[in-house]
Image (cartoon, rainbow, N blue to C red; front, side, top):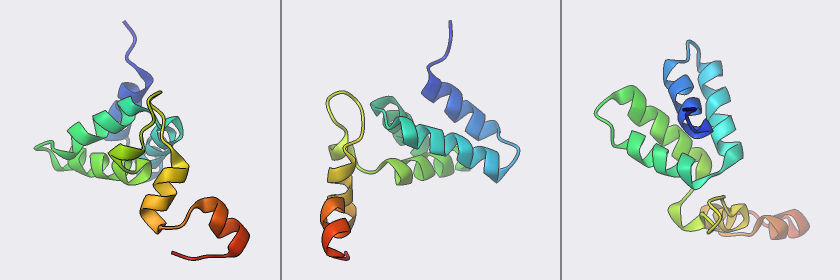
Length: 99
């Protein structure tokens, strides 16, 4: 039985021998933007082990907020942008508006 890609990336990030390797896995989780990645990060963030809590926080920091996860399990980046900056990405690009 093969582990889900998110589980494998998290395991690899925990075992990574360098920060670069660790962040490569976090970036892959961010790219996937799935509900599974988000839920796993929430669990990690409440771990009793500091390295797991740190990983959970780093993944969550890349993914965003629970209310921006779409029904298909992916992240709605436009909504996330509004939550984090108060300005939609498209408006920032066209008007130069800053948060």
